[in-house]
Length: 516
Ligand code: FES
Image (cartoon, rainbow, N blue to C red; front, side, top):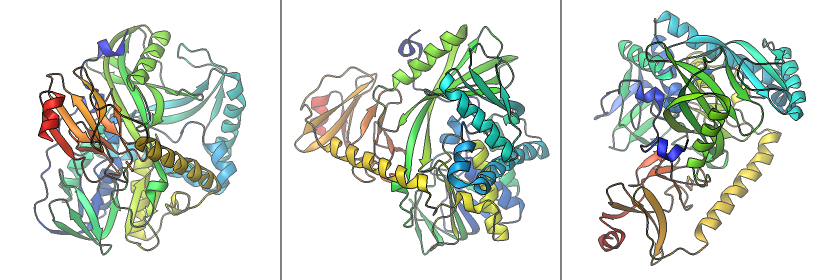
């Protein structure tokens, strides 16, 4: 089965396709609130919910529609099992901080369960065992070490010799009592609760600046004065001197949604070895189930032919199951930190009333809710018992090495993007893109299915790296810090806050150059 013939249309997430679109109004005036929250993903919406419930006057400002970003493109496993992490965490950070990490994520998981139960939210929530498995002997010791480390931190963890999937394994481990859900059903209900509790949600309201540590400025020029500000915009839109561009990189992952002849067993699964294979099921239609298969990875903007990743997942699906229908495919983008632990807490020591929640890696459901709990405790009670391990200003030994690797990679991509020759002319098929050079400009040309051509300046508006084309998602992606832009130049993902310069549109490339 070939992925290109299976999917003619743009990828789209099952979670978004199976939810009603939200319609919160755009902010059109100045405002004063207790807490301004920038970003309407799981961290922002959950923070708003907890703070509203505690009586704070809260406003959520979302640049697009809420829940459309990484939250709408997750696998939606809610777990403190974040692949093989605890043995490493204990070794690098010590037992106390590793325990903080585990407990915060466990609490995030149980908080989602409690909120769903308290508000009678029908979000396909179910308790599930979470498994890590390996089919390679060299990972057996790592699995054994992980079980020992997890148990020493108070996590219930068991070594297993087999799993119920049709995959032959060498070893596995099981965390019982983890969970999964439909994230949009849960979070859209939470958004309604926020409004019921007199919280404010504004969509199409892009925050572009923070001044004097207490005023958020929107693209339209409105000013939101707030005693506390939470930046939950995935990649922080405002840096405040925290230098996130040197401490966060972005990674892309791919997901298929398909039906199979076989019934999926209980639990969800992830491989210890690369390429990652992550599997879960999801109730679908009337008495059906959708099998989600996620995996593959590359740094944003460095993926080459991105359809390959979908194809690899599809090949794995056929090797493992009798596939009936391939119904959905989508990809996601995650912020990764240097030591693998999210940045949650005060943005910097100079801005004690500005908080940030980012860098959830690929585990944003438990850590998204945990970040809401930690930051709302810091605001309401002045402290959180989990502040130290997630402190955004920390410098850990693992982070220093990773800092050098990541920033050398940025430098290499910056230089490579400027070097090399490009053709002055190119023939492209409908649905494809290419780079050309005209005068000194590097121009990205995309031809849509009707033959209309769109040209943009492909120099990233963040820090000037040159963008690469992402064929599967039809976007221009930055290999340095992961900003993404549509073929018309609109921002799809930060850190960039300015769109690409459009160089014209036309019926063919020559005409488009004349338009320029
Ligand atoms: Fe930083 Fe493009 S995202 S230069």
